[in-house]
Amino acid sequence: MQADSTVTSWDFNRSNQVNEYVTLADGSRIQVRGTVYYDGYVRKTVIDGKVYLSGYVSNCYVEGIYTGTQSFLNGSLNIQGNGTTCASYCPSGTILFEVSFQMLTVSGRHTFWHPIIDLIVP
Image (cartoon, rainbow, N blue to C red; front, side, top):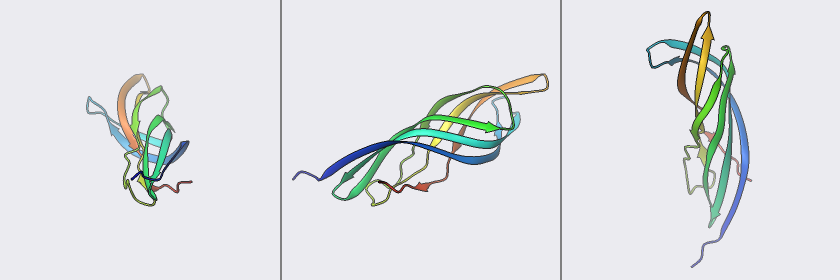
């Protein structure tokens, strides 16, 4: 028996506020405060009335209190609830950044994540 299947996909853009301390490899801590932005791609497959999601985060960056450079490393949708009528996801992204203050520049990496969202699928 062949399943009734439809596939749709779309890009997504999300943002949320972040205010946390990041511990770097050398043990130093910096405060990251501002807005974290995510870009990504979602693919929705419906099989016999059930929703399955997959996808990835394609960019992640922070606008906040520090200056310096950032580059995106990787990200995931961390899909939860596959096979339900309304799936949820929790996108995350890891960025590499440099933070400059006074005469010191430190670099590090940190993963930011967004709380789980119920995705209302079209």
